[in-house]
Length: 446
Image (cartoon, rainbow, N blue to C red; front, side):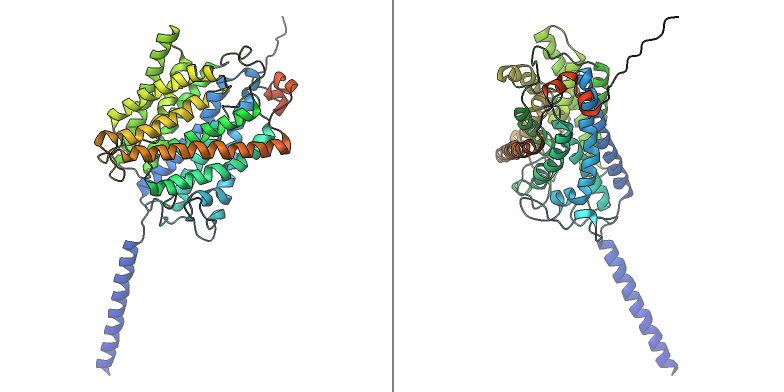
């Protein structure tokens, strides 16, 4: 009897130990949350979010005073709309497993435990899936906000509410899926875009160009259009953009590691190089450098380095920054004047063309010494990557411009895109919101 009891206890002990070791093995195989990586991505999400209010200040300072509130509103309202849309279906369409074109619907509403506190088995497996979703939400917010600079001072606010809701689903979601989802066709092709040169900058610039062409030029353009009314606000907005861009690019490493540090360094270096380049070009062509030019150049450098930030080193970032300053300066000062289009805040010249240069430059300078997950570029003998980059560039331009044009026609048919001439003359602040940026009070004489 004692022998049987002993054998029974021994068996139970053996089975328990086997189950313990098996559970430990399974626990080791399951993705584990890295607190440092999670903290960095949450911080980066906040950094990217502050870019949209920074953009509002940047754009708001550049327009006429009577349009400042409306211009800032166009950016700020995107934070409200896209944040909700992203949870409901935007994230699922952009990143859920689906097909080569767009994601599935299984992550809509983030429900049924599909997107929660546990790491994803597809994206950034050392952080909660919710953290990755939040980080990507901030990119989806700023992208449509960027395009508002092309048609500033002449677009109906209610039309923008409808357009941005349609645009994030029909334009942004497919582009994000193509480039960043493992089953997206540009991802499979091997086109490189670390933080959004095609998805964010070409997409916003080309889309803005489509809307700009639909609404037409501002009344009195170019003779009656005045210079930026508040350069200090514009400079403050630039500073917030530069500050937030570290989360934009370095956060895209999705880890607090050496690649994040490298992306941080090249982001700062490219912005500085481009800002200085633009100032020199102004000095040469216009005899005086301006703070508007320096800020525009810095943003151009930030745009240009975005797709390359996780694939190139510091010296390459200087070349990309200088190139971004040159390309964007001549697009803003020469191409815009030659073609005669009214891109109010130079989104086409800085974001669309800067993003195009940056995506192309990525194929030239990318190096596996910086990021083993990438490839070596043209300067290392890999000609094929340049072709892949151009396929990504052309796809971004064609899809963004074409689909946005269709959406613009649809919104115009429903409610119109442009306010009346009298409303535009009075100012968008009063006509669209019944509020103004500045109140002037007369004091009683004593």
